Length: 188
Image (cartoon, rainbow, N blue to C red; front, side, top):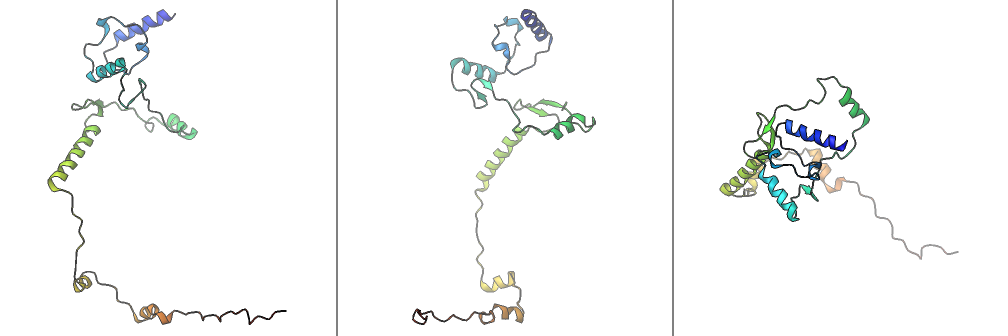
């Protein structure tokens, strides 16, 4: 039975167009003849393979030889799963069919949209260039005369009643208590 499944998977792999895929269980299976492998492979994958064979440290996206998988942090609620499954077809999450590869970096992007990776690189490059050309903006506090300051930033004029409230004598003050002495208390 297992031989039949292996042969079927081999025939399916031959019939499908050559598409780059994630590493699968085929790494554990014996190597196939060279004519069944795709002619052009990504040089980054070849570098990764060489690193793994030498036993060196692999890039941070790989964990002990296996690709880290994106996993949701929390289980979706019952309501959310039902919403997704039972909502009408036009309100369901539609698969993106207009995907392509960026000509510059080779990452997946939506067609007629700018690659977000390239966009981030361009933005950081332009920020650095702006810092080099203009330098760091100087923070200064304007020094003004008191007269100019009153003209530019006029204060609200307080009414007579508000001025009265601000005076110290207006606020009621409690009388100081008499000093307490032990001698004044009668002893029985």
